[in-house]
Image (cartoon, rainbow, N blue to C red; front, top):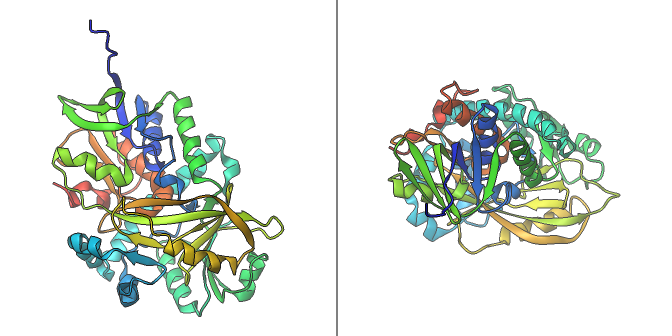
Length: 419
């Protein structure tokens, strides 16, 4: 005997402890499988930490729709608050950009919206069940979320409402007076609003992920914090090499978000993954003038939302390399606009930057890798990973045991991009 510890052996090793990974582990454990989730940081500390905390019923419309093509001339200036893009990155990734824009046609938008509708509906049901079971029910707010226009946004609001209604997603168009009744503490700068009535939000996305992780551990699963060095097939199983040991598993779920593609590259997969980078900053709220729900400022292209840490201001999208230096210009432009809507005080904590993993069709990969049995892919959930994590995890867990996913997952098959 060498004295070395034997590798840990489980049915399922999930790589990544964001919302998607923890959800996959929790769903697999609920199906009776032995599970370990591995990440270099504690659950919910990376991409899942920095979002607006919205459990969004209305995020069925992908980013690349015909509206994107109509707005493209504005975005090409690289000065619009909704989108900044790095020119050298765009040139180096021209194939991804072309495929992304090619998906923004009416004929391709509706099938993708239908697919996302199934994923989101499943996810929201699971969120509402799990957050109570995890003892975090106090964090959820069933107040909807408001998209609001400063300029005349009535046509845009009605168009979006009609698109959502086609899939049974309810919303209400509001005028200035109705917005003031809904949010009495904000300055009446918005002329039109669209209230997503079936949407909820939470006051700390990271805390919700950690609550789900605790529920996984309490249910017999495991969470391990370690750097993931490599992944290799080992007969009918998988060997996951960590900085402090290794794991053997019959199934591996890759749910590493923006780091997924590089782990899969040694296995021969070239995943066309890009990154929607985003930023946020917290501010001290005024307790006498509280913000009651998340508000998406359509003209300023930012979201302001009440969080446990304070009022969180989140920026628009930045398309660039995952690890490129931070550029806080979008966030810095949003803060004074937000101050013109709701009173808040000084900054709290440090500014945050994250990278949301995005595939050219704005749909995640959910399913088995084409050439490797027992290798499951669950990433690419772009900016709605916090919303769609539970449904993604439940679908993968079902597939692992040979059951049907809880929604039609064919549109998310990995073989649409990798072979």
